[in-house]
Image (tube, rainbow, N blue to C red):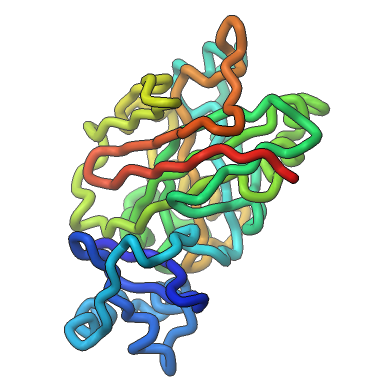
Length: 282
């Protein structure tokens, strides 16, 4: 199943995506769940699927896409998690995942613009797989990790590189408003299947700039969940963005930055295709 958060006629909602339609489960279950995150927290996605039978069907062309989870408690990003990216950055091998955070308001949805801030032109692409936590937990073992996942989505972890390089801490360059695209939808684990062989590709104006398989991660998904849950309690709706492969614009000669008027796409087999334009901050 595919679930998305969206707007229709000025109101925020959520529901199932089937073919060319969004099924407005959120409107039908408004008395029980305020948003997709609350439905995930209640373990109610199967109930949502059952409720879809009587819900309004809206053509996808008539909705506005929101980040899959617009209001996560936490967005934890895994840095340097593909060997090709670690090598192009010149970073040393490490025994534990590199983790940094994003704020919820740094996100934007499918078919909405990623915004290049007025204080920088160094806006870079990072195509990634995101996972959404479905069941809360602390000290989650690797063997139990898969059972804590609600589903997967595409993510473009847009980075303002000069601000990222101001210090050894990544936070400023990773949190400009509307630089992290998240969508278009959440794909449940049963539909995603085995992830290892799935291809992740980032394209800028139609040109392939990143190309890898998810099995090339240095720290696999169970290890990421184990490690993150060791220092924080993972809550339903939390997002883990699992890392980007090599090919980022900052490490090209000359650097390849996203600029206003560009179109960037992140596509992952069986997960979806996330497309965004680039706009300049006013």
